Length: 512
Ligand code: ARG
Image (cartoon, rainbow, N blue to C red; front, side, top):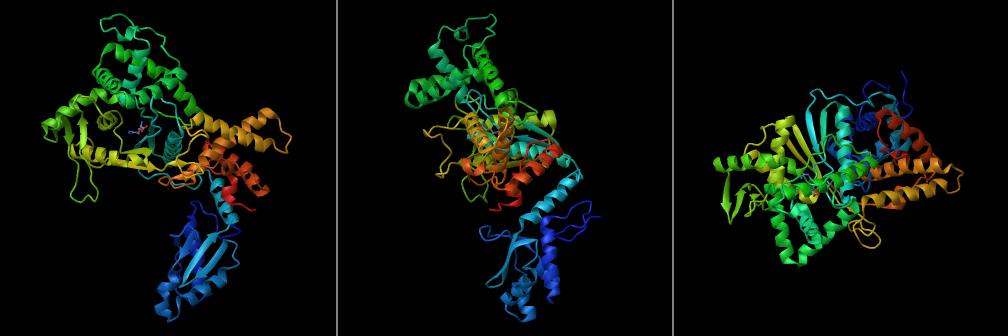
């Protein structure tokens, strides 16, 4: 059996958690200094700005040993000061022990994980069926950086879930049923009123070819959306078109299908470039067939009632500290809302996959929407009691100025452009001062660039906003980093058959 150079523990089949290793080390030191080992328990720091781990046992032991906590902490720190497990271990008044672990220790730990075929991850004792609702792109709108986080976080959860042994189904849940469709249809109608889609008496087949390209479509939506904000008649027309589409007007459905075809082909390409794969390319509209029955039942059972023309379900609870407005199930014009499709989608998912859990990876600003949807689904019995409904809300990706990430001109940054910028910067760094084959360098830049984007995202707590800093993300500095980068990351890639989420520099921490 191999002995780890730093923690001096035998490599065992299932690896101990890094926290347990640190705890063990500190507990031994407490014992060595004549204190009870249990005081040496280490936890994750609640002051990450100061340290990564901390031990507060000296305070607890002060009474028993009739000593100032700082003295106990000092004793222990004196023993561990030179220990290679730590970069820094300090006693801080009144008696905290603050710890930062050494890069080499972490690297060695990771190497240990990597040496194990299963990366020392245990299989789930009871595999579950888990659906992950992520991506969430809207048809006819280009993917922007906001969609990036959902794609990256959702994809990683999907892969981790599978690796652990769960049956995980990823669904992109495209937005294709709301006002944005009505807006596009109305704009197309204004531009090309002669199109057969708008002839309500037409009974023949609709053309195979779409009346727009993807780039035209991407221009149509923002134009229409802008118009609807200043032109009330246009907005009215778009609302009407939305209701007509939802109620099944043939020409509108055919045009909508064209929008889907053109848009989905483009989305597949873009998600493919991110190495993000969905099992299901379901859409909000797929929930439509479930809506009438759902609404009837909610009415029949007395959950839903009319309020100012709209059909609503109350979901507030007495214990609420902030107001949770009722769920609007149908608007006064009968059109389905985002809430309606999300509820009906739960019915569809139950029917088709009977999941134990559904996880929604969506911008945290939508939290209230999901509180309402989950409560309504439970109240009206759309899910079994033990079905988990989880909202995993992520923060905003900001620019260096702390505001939502924008292009230099101040517009919404398209994902494609962001990726191209990163690849270019990576290429520049790789070829700077190096003789490398151009094609190979481009290929590497792509791989490393994508990994950097993913790592940059996943290294942050999902719920927090984070700053996207191109310069920081593309740092490939120092021999040490590069060595780990090219050995470790490639190995991780081959083991997991997926992208590299860990950039070497960060695994081993920067050395310069
Ligand atoms: N299309 C939505 C948006 O862009 C996200 C969809 C999230 N998933 C869901 N089931 N609501 O905001």
